[in-house]
Image (cartoon, rainbow, N blue to C red):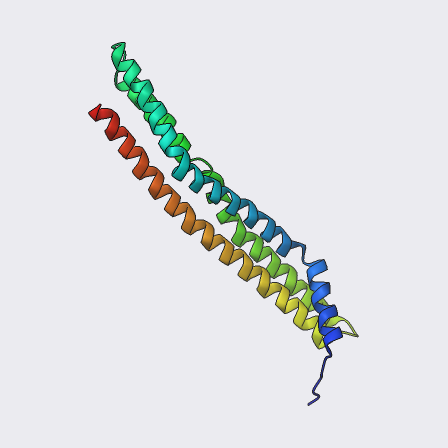
Length: 175
């Protein structure tokens, strides 16, 4: 049994090769950043713009009542417009959280192909072999972890949007 010792330069070179060649990992990170930006924007809308929207749409409802034009159709329209704002970006967040595991799987396949190429190469080293395995596992992990965060926050945002829309609808019924 032969024990191989690698110096820091070889390991750094292998890691640098991984960073340069693993495009799928960087694609996952880019898609994740877009998804997290949309999550932040949706939370900001629900927390900060909700009060402004409530006031604006309530004022519209009061003006409609003063003119005796308030009816179920106009109430439904106002609730729908409010709900659209509360559910902003959620379809895209949901879509991105479903795409991320697929990108992770694509990275896994890509990493395994690199591993098999290192195994069949005449000069294939353990370092090249382990870089392919690391690439496969890291992209899988990145795709799953980022997807789970997207699923969690999508669910949380959806619950809040339903709660706020229902409260607004009930508020208009009382006015």
